[in-house]
Length: 373
Image 1 (cartoon, one colour):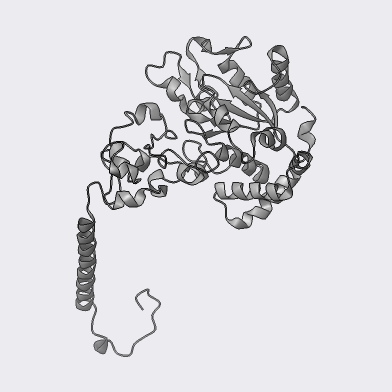
Image 2 (image 1 turned 60 degrees about the vertical axis):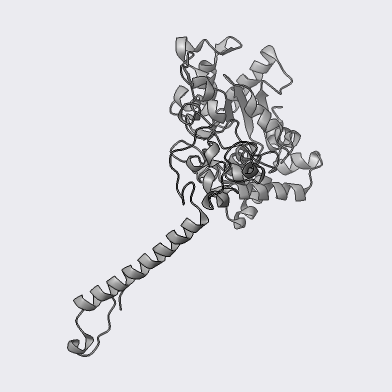
């Protein structure tokens, strides 16, 4: 696979029968996912056409392989196109044909021959207790492998909750001392794609951004891409109108549940979580947990296993009109706000008249540059 990274993406796609129309459609999807203005489509297409296929290695540590499964089930592009064409995917324990010494030799070759150029993707937490002995691969600890591989990468991407902050493995009492990648290997460039599992559309978008602009996208305080984690789920949810109207599911299977009403009372954490689940969705944009009838558990939030559980406990307070507010009450609140605004305007007008001298006593009116002129 070593020479494949020298191919351009269009050449690799054409060799597999992927048309230019499909290629441009993929680029358009990535522009939308990155929340870029449509005018950037041309720049993305041009960059992708001239880009060399980036070399990528995928490391798995303390994990359930859910993030690999999530990536394998994407079809935009299909996993075959993604693995063989978009990337020169040199190492991945779950899907690679090689095994044993041959597999480890492939990883070492990438580190040696592409130092500072390849992208490392890490899935799973990294144990640090007792020198990291609770996860070993080919005689080396996960901690040793992560330090060796990620320190020489151009950038590292931590996919899923466990690779980001330790996830379920780190949840109390954490006997293995599991932590996320950025804690295990401090000082490296890390993009965290939180979620349980990560959304492959976001992972593809991060890679496209890197190929287009030669840098990772803008990140938040947790090193998560703002395009994917910059907006509150509650504000993007298709059930938000039901929340504002006071229509809530009271118990699983009731009439409100069947009608798709708001799941806030069932413990939905959407008002406190940030992610683009409602927009990107899963299974080629088919659905996401809330649309399918289950509340958000804030799986893309920091240390969500500890901080957001119990998952079915109702949040104490959220923004908006509030729980159990009827349409009649909302109307009275709006009417009161309008009356208050009118009263404030009248009072302000009276005060201005009292403190401002009459124009007649000021003589001729002079031009003024003040905002009130």
